[in-house]
Amino acid sequence: MHLHDYTQQSYFTAPAPDGTISPKSFEDYREKVASMLKKYNVTKAVVSTIGGKNKLDDAGILIPGYFTNAPPSDTLVFKKLIESGELKVFGEIGAVYAGYTLSDPKFEPYVSICERYNIPVAIHTGGGPPGITYQCCPKFRLYLGDPFTIEDVLAKHPKLKIYMMHSGEVFYEHALRLMLQYPQLYSGLGAILWIHEQPMDYAENFLRKAKSYGLIDRIMYGSDQMVWPHGIESSIKKLNSYEFLTEEDKRKIFYENAVKFLELDK
Ligand SMILES: [Zn+2]
Image (cartoon, rainbow, N blue to C red; front, top):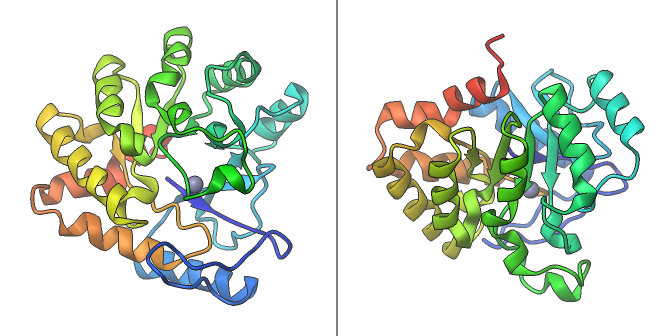
């Protein structure tokens, strides 16, 4: 439920927090992502692309998501992307990076359109990379990543399909509380299964509690691999390593919950 893609122009190389360097070239990257998906039998994956048109897909695996940090600026263009099938998921929305929350009135028209067209919304929750406030994103604030900031949207749009990317991360208890409060709300594990020791702690705590609260049916696997294809493998291995989850739980998280959420069985 959480891949990214890039173009020749936007692709960059950097060390992942676990020290692994990203593939040297865009071509190499594309190839490595595709072979990783194949190796682990990933049959469908939501990919967040700037502007909503993905360039990575040759095999019909990728479901196009619309990546943005700020609210889009044109509802007609947005609707056209939905009607043409170029936008099937509204997200990843990294509102926290641009100083917004999803409840900001500027997101309202787009969220309304998504509710009307049955388009799932994918909102980034939790923190971001170290020092990001001094780099791209001076308006980034941790507190804007609190899942409670989406509650107004949930209240106003009861039919909206929505999932919290990274399952709240540092705010995982708020994510769980919100899921108990709003039975339609899903969560995607995103980067927390592999990116760094701290989020991996959150992931384990989140899943243990979700299991005891009866919430496993609304949790979906994701990797948020960005420019590090090995993140797909690391996150799959991590989830598989949890002995407190049964094979059935894992099957739901890896596959069945997403099929239900995205209505792929239709
Ligand atoms: Zn992401």
